[in-house]
Length: 165
Image (cartoon, rainbow, N blue to C red; front, side):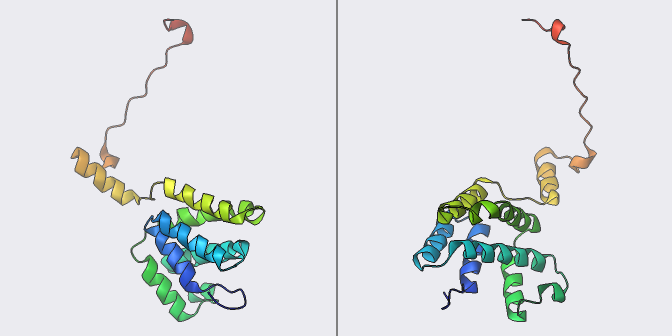
């Protein structure tokens, strides 16, 4: 932790690494440490949201001027952190955090609100790139690609009066 209420980037990196590895106990431990150290949890959440935004932009390899508030060392560290993480997973996590931002900001107990956000993210399955689904389908069904499957014939609906009671 930094003095003067600032948050160390190592805390945000540790939390994002725990999210990407789906280690919910480590996520909750980091949140508890931030709380015990007297940090403003609403400010922490805002910093965390920006951190995930930066991770997503680094993964997308955007122009350097868009990430002007980060040092080259920070960009390099973030690139190293997300090299094995899929963009859909980063986007899914960022979207979840962004959608919950208003609830956390207005929460009477922000620690519980933040923990709820991450418990939701833990329940969701990992985002999976379409090519992985295609490969899994091929391995399972022996079909070249699931794009080449025969379409399923639409079922004909019977009218209600034709249904037996």
